[in-house]
Image 1 (cartoon, protein in one colour):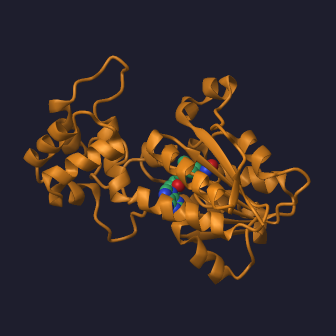
Image 2: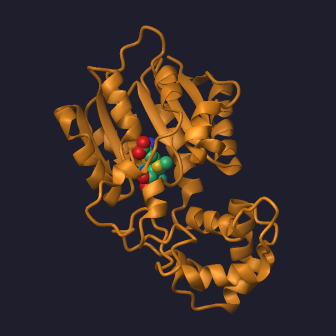
Length: 302
Ligand SMILES: C[S@@+](CC[C@H](N)C(=O)[O-])C[C@H]1O[C@@H](n2cnc3c(N)ncnc32)[C@H](O)[C@@H]1O
């Protein structure tokens, strides 16, 4: 599929929607300003705007293509919605620029959306072999692409990233194969190099899955943005306001748990979900992408 005129928002099915609504709307509390820090294709945003008739919503995303599609999807909510081409890590600057007070709910739905994976040209999917190896959320920036990262990073550092961000046990062999394949240009160049050293395992996971996750995280500095974003969101919330985070892999989950634990230990927040909330069987049957999703919620203390 090319990034043409089709309605991309229809390609993404938001996860844990009922659970997000339930946890963000603490009993009896009006939600007047809500921040969707990863507004993506607007699924969660649309649900919150529909459920909370009077709330206003700030939607942030690093991906301009997603924001353009979301603008159309949320147009019927008029002035209740403002969209920002920004990282959630820059929430303090966005709030200051908007000058609209403190939010009483913030949602972060981490990772990539289905359209980012499915639409050709972005390089996020190992299936789109002719794509340039790009993987930047913000393809409008002049930041280095995944190809630049692989072509310029030394082998030891590549191995570290692939092991730590992808959990790939054969990280050293993968790094060696990628260095030998330089200069890489396309997704195919990456996949062929990885397949040389990572066999298909019994779980059916594609050999490139872990390495692609690691490269995407490095190219977008996802760890750094998440760390700054969690701090920024907890600090920005009005007293009693809630932060909900949906994570998709253990690295993200660990960062969220740690940030919530530290905020609770210093009396800045109360952890609402002792364990991560998982999707119901019904949701899993309808949307396999939800299988690794976990929702964690914290409440800002006055
Ligand atoms: C799982 S999707 C969100 C889907 C959205 N909740 C929906 O219902 O359509 C994750 C989105 O987060 C965006 N993203 C990733 N890192 C970001 C960051 N640091 N700041 C803002 N958006 C980010 C991606 O571009 C992607 O659109």
